[in-house]
Length: 86
Length: 142
Image (tube, rainbow over all chains, first blue to last red; front, top):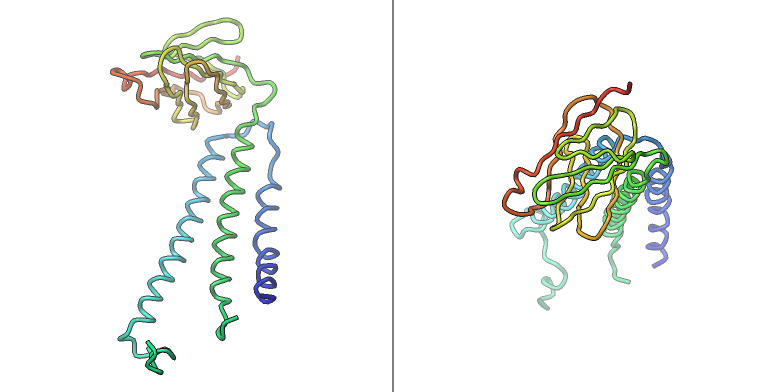
């Protein structure tokens, strides 16, 4: 549990705080901003994030399926299978 | 606690949560910036009705089916409808706001290019919705 909290703290410092600072530390409203540029830039940034998350999630699933399939040469029985309990 | 460590799962969750927080923060911030109307923006009343757009400038000038604006100035559109729900859209400037009867919705922009641009209805509003268009003329400041 302590490890988990430590890890979350590290992640907070590494990712979440800089993210918030980056997002909120930008220009202030009231200027003649170009909404076309702002909105399309937002769209492209979010698409990058969406595809990154998609790649990480689907890549992990593909890796899981390949690595833990029964026919994988590295596959070994779990301790439950070894003991015949399952 | 189980025998094996589960830190990869926590890293995985942490990275995904961080990315989602970033997405939310970015979107919130841009929305905040885009919705803040400049104080010196000129008000244009936009009315949608089946199946045309009419515009009223601050000085009372009215236009139907076309809108003349000046490059480099900010304009605040007060969008409403007389009958059904329409949606006021200037595609080239990414302006989009629903026109709802009994409501005044606000959207603003500052044209930065001289030219002719299409204004269209983006909410299906009946038989001639497809042709509920108007022309935006952006002119050089005199």
